Image (cartoon, rainbow, N blue to C red; front, side, top):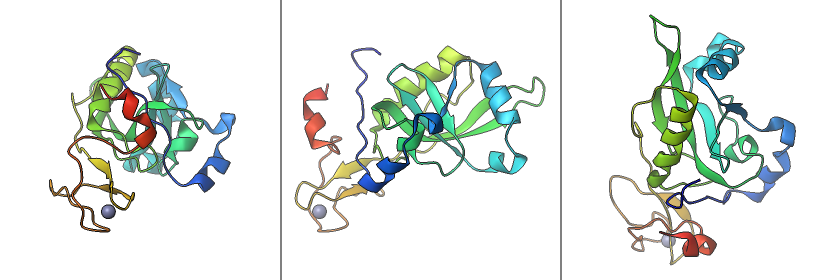
Length: 180
Ligand SMILES: [Zn+2]
């Protein structure tokens, strides 16, 4: 973990924490071969929708089946990144590579800057990727009403109360000291 990477704490509904179990943690992908083995073990229908991913603080990419909760995939721990990922097999080599990737995780609400941790985890495993988010989400906490929301179309206004939202990531107020 480099000094430039920040960690994200789970900020979603507390009842989901009850689902966290060590054995439900996402599968770690240390190599392209591990990804191939994991993917080929899944029913083919699973591949048509994005997977849940997190990057844990050990720098490893962890994957879970579609619609899994990020906090369960992360074993309830802090993450360097979270979101959804879609893979496709290269016709020539049969190797799986990332075609779509987004930081969409309402459980962790990570800043797009978390891409560096995603790229590092994929590069480390030798998995090809698009070089950046294919869909990027800006999460903010409203400092007036405290609701968390997604900024739509660059409109930094709270959908709940109409207050102005800050330009900088602020979802976890207790993490302010971690900001670069
Ligand atoms: Zn508000």
